[in-house]
Length: 183
Ligand SMILES: [Fe+2]
Ligand SMILES: [Fe+2]
Image (cartoon, rainbow, N blue to C red):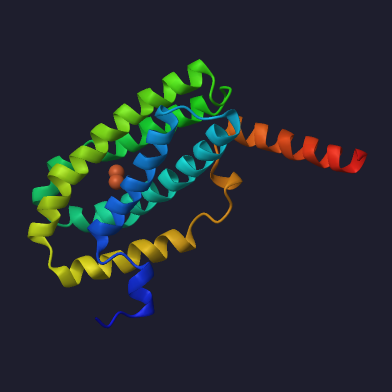
């Protein structure tokens, strides 16, 4: 079958792309649930935060507004923004906790539960209706916009990190630097 180079890296349409993001985050939360070292916890937290920030930005700025052009989606989009904000707020709070500590793990479990609720709403209610009401051509064009949006947004991980984590990462950088200098 003839495949273009772009097709191997590009999700086939906007829904596929957003579901891929959800799956990526789910894998990371599953790893956390199975128990991880402090270092891995910190790494996973950074990636989760970064992925979710980008995902929420392109949903809020590109996907939801495109969908909201059809009035029948009003109810389905009603809670989406506040649910994103709630998750972001909670991750911000978690960034002050010791990665992989009991409190950190408990809070990550809590935020995952809320996120699952949001993801299920999208995958079971919103996305199927979008598939019904938008043409495949429209969804492919939307995928292009979402990918472009992601590339043009946040390149710097630290730029998109909450305060507590940014502080710790900075301290870690400084101490690594100091150690490197001392040796
Ligand atoms: Fe989503
Ligand atoms: Fe969302």
